[in-house]
Image: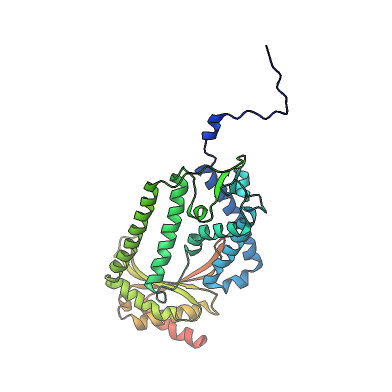
Length: 335
């Protein structure tokens, strides 16, 4: 005996399929992030072409341009407006939802992106070393390593929900596009919580230990002291000094070189005059500078908006004696 099933009847649900987690896999989420990063990089390049001159003047604030562009992109597409899908997530068949399986609001999507982007915003931020208190530098280091690392850890290893810190903060989930209905997520296992707490303690202790170790190195304190007047110059964003030994190809004695790397927020009126002024400060402030075989002044200027960067670089290399001959001439020509 056979029975006919109406084609309009609902398809029977296999109970075993309910055991398959709906959360997007790690590989798909990383692939989606790469696609989105490429899209934003293209946008950043376009912004750089159109507003090239203006971006040079922003200095540290330039990264906010990329943050603003990223917030518009992710917050708009990963909320109800974009049906929870950035271009990368759309390609990878993923979407962002709340615990009920609905797309989140724009405000929650913006908060989600902000928390996720903070480590990226701070990473590579070229803050002035001599004018930034140690507690601020350590806090930035802690946020980058712990917040960014915690998000990466939870997405990779917390298979109960695959929620990063940004997802936990706003109650969102990244699921496969064809998932419908509420999300059945279990709490974070205690093991993961203990690991994150241990990470926080280790990173905090490491920051303090590095500071103490760095302060005990005579060369570090000396180079930092030499950088103070350089970072006080108009237009200088950051200055760092270091020494190195350069071995020649002929097998002769190595040359002892003092390197000064200067990042400016804009192009100086005269690169030669600026390099000469930096050399004059170093030779005046550092009594040991004359002991080096060569003094290298590296000048960097350009912009960094997070999603795109462009830097121009020019290096000036002379012996201390040559610098002493060049400096007066440069200063006379460009007062």
